[in-house]
Image (cartoon, rainbow, N blue to C red; front, side, top):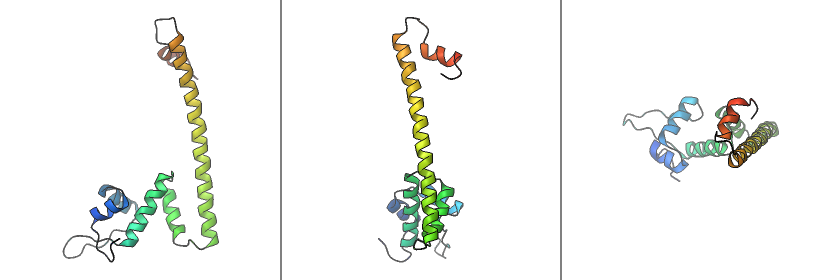
Length: 140
């Protein structure tokens, strides 16, 4: 990892596994600082910026939204504080409950689709059973 303020935005993005526009977007959202532009005109980033960007990327991978990531970043600054840890744990627990709810909903959707496909495969009516069901049923 480069030391000091030696990374350009392109290098930072590449090392974090995101694209340059993502870095700029996170800066506009206030998740990532925008370094001052020196007289040479090229902003430089450091290892702390890279660590923060990687934190954001990992949080997104596990499903956190940017607003939640903002809260987690605040907790990250106080990682050894039990109150901060509790707040992060509650946020993660809420996220897990949301994910489980979405999984259950996706499961129900899959069951409906399986049923529609079976109706279509076994139908003797020339009209498409899937289209017909979706047109007439309000609850498939």
